[in-house]
Image (cartoon, rainbow, N blue to C red; front, side):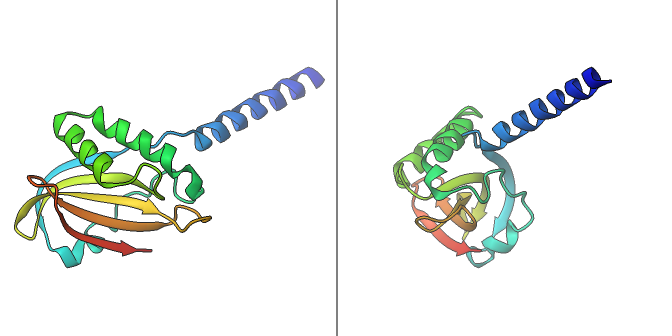
Length: 150
């Protein structure tokens, strides 16, 4: 009986450790959606209010550079349009910034073909707990609109 308890405790400990390590890993996946929907610049926050929060919500802002690198690597691995967007985000956002993109969608914004990017960010010394939506013109890379929200 003691052997069964010890083995059960060991298994429980190993499962707990693997869950903890998975939650603390430096991985951030990026979701990319190709849609034909048309969005208004003023409605970006509402349009994306139902997407799932990323697993790194609430992580320290100091983790942002590693998480961003992981998210952009994930995006690049999804195809050529996604790789083009990852290149744009690498060029536009500082690599040591306090934000991490986690969702992107092809859509029309303000009458232009756009990439809409949703990211989490946070204040210096804080956590990744705030949202921002960007719309980039897919041809020029210009920012169409940027909206910050909580």
